[in-house]
Length: 467
Image 1 (spheres, helix red, strand yellow):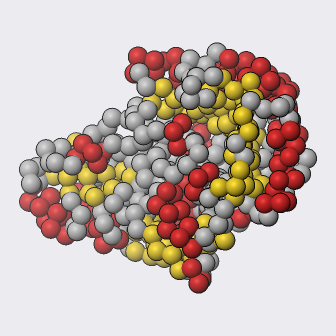
Image 2 (tube, helix red, strand yellow):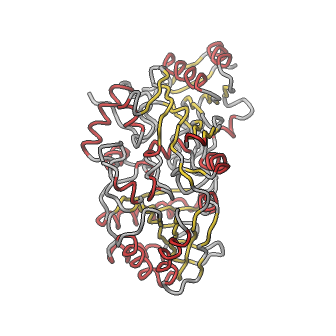
Image 3 (cartoon, rainbow, N blue to C red):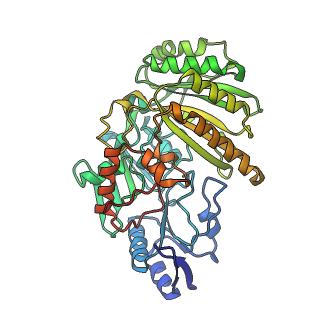
């Protein structure tokens, strides 16, 4: 291979000789790519079309041995490292100009042990991969709200999803993880081994090691009673008021909901609610009746469906290659003032692809001890997602500005806290600080000092090691 110029961990250029690259390529079962080789441009692409970065090297790993070889090589040559799992991170931190990208996206295998209610998945798997295999047995675990989302990033950040009301977050269902640490050691983290690392992996994002496989607890979920109801945008104040009162008034664990503002595929602005009931359908019909009888709605699509169908319901709203900018808050209450702000700003949204979503955290997730995992804001009722979505680069400024203005206007009504999976690039230190309770962040910085004292893994919602 030809020599390349790459970035060091300190940000300076360094030359990596061709014979060293040849030696690394000989150790890998997957391909090692530079910009002159076939497959490089496809490998560097991520979900957010705003991200167009060019790493110096891409190691496309097919197993833990490949990941370890890449980590050892990066450490030996002091290379800046990014780690790509499913590639769905909003800030695109899996790929970085001049860095060595350790790419797990080929590691998408999923093995189901139905008798033990367990599934193990590779670090590059997406929830669509996971659900396809577990649903063969009528099983599932909490796993986001989009089939294209990677299991790694979602789980390491906490993992909100449609089953969290009954079964907790994705990280609450994590049983064990195989990890390559920054010093090159391969370890397993669980309640029985490396318990402190296991605690940090459940909400601490990608700060402590590269997780090559995840083992999850599974639950019987053969089908759900689920779907949206839509109302005219003019009815949004009443609909959102009803939505909050309905959720805060005490819904059963079997139900998880979302409410929000969006446009239909034919461009009509609406206010919508989604209910996903994972339990007896007869009981679910009674529980969801108030949601369906409000209005009447323009559209009522609540019906019995396979669990993967509701997982895919928002896929068309978040297609790969569109341009995305997101902000958000964790919230407990939805006041009339906050509702008015949401509706007023959405009336002025510059792109019909943009959405505002109030995603319920889930009853079971709320009951977990805040100290039990690194996802510590267990009192939050909603994650408010402000998602600007558009296609023309000429429209970047106005769409980004709209999301920022709505974020700033709603902040006084929030916990002034952030779901770490929503952290972008601007003012990163402040955003990370807002993602954790102070006592949790103190513990995380100490964990970082133990497992990654040189901050080898820094292209993430970065938690610097304590002194």
